[in-house]
Amino acid sequence: MTIFSRIIAGEIPCYKVAEDENFFAFLDINPMSKGHTLVVPRKTENDYLFNLDDETYTGLTLFARKVAKAIEKSVDCKRIGVAVMGLEVPHTHIHLIPINKEGDMNIGNPKLKLAPEEMAQIAEKIRNNF
Picture 1 (cartoon, rainbow, N blue to C red):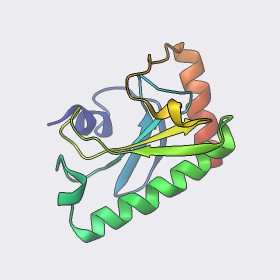
Picture 2 (picture 1 turned 30 degrees about the vertical axis):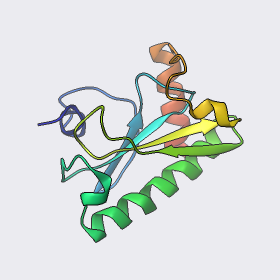
Picture 3 (picture 1 turned 180 degrees about the vertical axis):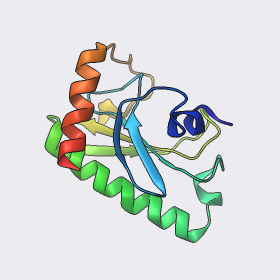
């Protein structure tokens, strides 16, 4: 069972921003920017986006778009950058990263250290805009 499956099951706490019967979105605990969100499928631990079946792949992408629109309304940014690396956790996931310039997507940038209260406020704002 991956850490993301444990988060979805409620075994590990998270800052949930959106969910439906097939997909789950929560704030990255090591964010590149405020509002950095991970979007994952609930029912598969497949670790590679392009190995998902067509229905899951399409559904994940459409769900991620809805989450991205909610993030845009919730944090100050020009766009929502999208990254799919899939090497950190063996469970398909899409990074939605609020950006203002191309350099904001550099994975080597220092991660933000946000207080739990601020993370909770950001998650609530995104949830309310979802």
